[in-house]
Amino acid sequence: MPQPKVKLVVTGDDFGYCPKRNQGIVDCFQAGGISNVSLLVNASSAKEATELAKRHHIPIGLHANLSEGLPVSQGLKRGSTLLNKDGFFHGKMGFRKALQSGLVNMTEVELELRAQVRLFGELMGYLPCHMDGHQHIHVLPEVCEVFAQVLSDCGISYTRVPVERGLHSCPWLSPVLRDFYMQVEKDALESIPVFRRHGIRWPDVYLGLTTMGHNMSVPNLRRAFSHALERDLDVSLSPPGGESKNRTNTTERPVLTAELMVHPGYPSHPQEGGCGEGPDDFSQSADRQQELTTLKDPALLAFYTQERVQLCAFRDL
Image (cartoon, rainbow, N blue to C red; front, side, top):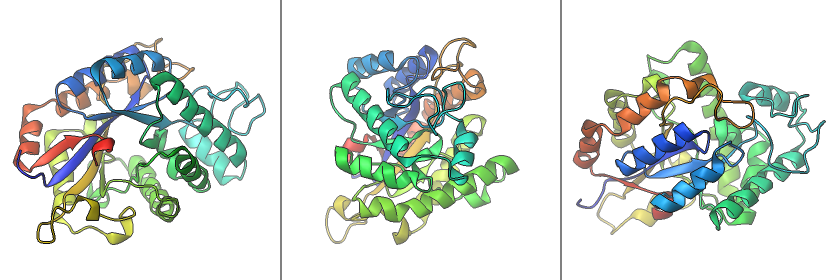
């Protein structure tokens, strides 16, 4: 390929969730549909996932989880502000509600995040170079401060800032989903000064909210990319240093860096997988396989070549 126009990290989230997810992610990686994965260390098949990553040389980072299943830290006991009466995390919306009510102890957040980083290191033999948040918990108010400090202390260079161009003009999103994504975007925008202050980096462009599950198709992905490729960058969203590290000389347009968040896999068996409570509805649906099929589609791979999009890992940015 000639000099790329875009260096794209296609990250398969929720690696380790169940054997069917793991197999789908491996198949997608081998087919050239993803270039990076994000591991749930508290998921039921996390150890198997790390063995697969080593065997197939899959670049892997950490998908920090404070919202689903069981904690990793042995220091979190019943009565922890992160856990419900049954000892599980509060859930995607439950965690947000507890946070908004001022009921989440940030010391416990830090304890759990550090425990997950340590466990990743034990499983893989090294620390991740990127770390994001399951269900976007890492950009939530207060949490992002702790998250950024943990990344800085552990030497983890990259995170995810889920602000997607074209989100506001996406007709196929349901009102409930659109409202949630708008809140994710608001939180992400407010997290940027925190990440910048700690020297944390992120790609220039993010994609993935508008193309999740049954909304993923080659036309929808092309639409998302058109928004990313045809507009000038908003400097306020840029990571420290902006695009300058990718500039080859003073006359060429700099290489754009981007991340596409995806969730490929095969549908989970009803009683197999999850993070301690069993697999959720999304995992058992056909949505995961829809993503897998689309990401492997020759038409999408041809589009990458046509637009000079080079798939890579975070370590290659």
